[in-house]
Length: 220
Image 1 (cartoon, rainbow, N blue to C red):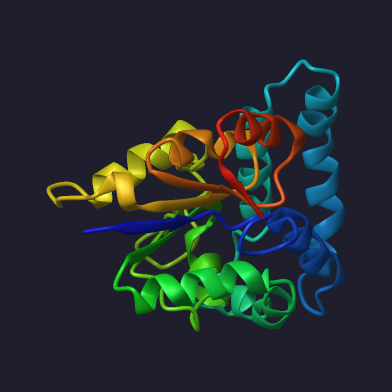
Image 2: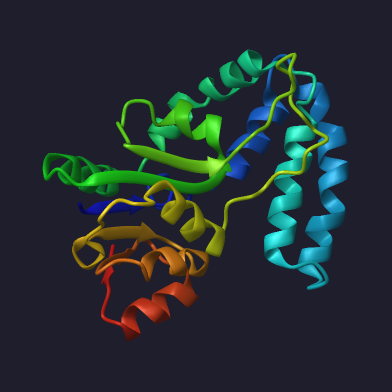
């Protein structure tokens, strides 16, 4: 079995998910009152990151937690509806060349996977028309009464955690890695790109571009 693994931010989706989520909260007709408190809380880890006092991975994980905490009064169904409101903005920002690759892989009977640090229910909502076989994201836990469980820290899927999740999902399946594909845009995607025989750098940031050029990888 062959697989094709797609990153989301900067790859399948041309922009950054977290900025999209921030704008959505800021201008939301119902929830925009939560934005100021969210923004005040997110500033310290972001400033710490800019001052090189907080690692990027920690800053991203903390930011994801803070955003989710700002919506903690929503039920599971309300949160899922909140994410569906972003279907059209995401659709307008899809990288059509990567969507074309995705569809070709499906035609070629290659199992397609979306692996991202974005919230899992968000990914399911905004890619419902793209027919992924597997979607791996940052899971959101809910309490017994279907409220967001803010007492359980998020396990943000990024870097090596992506490969751990991929291997867990594919456990026991015979994968033809040499003839499989992976698409990513940043150096944090390198562990996933290294898994396959056909890695593709998509609009890569400078560090990944240097690696891709050195290894003669395809660059889109």
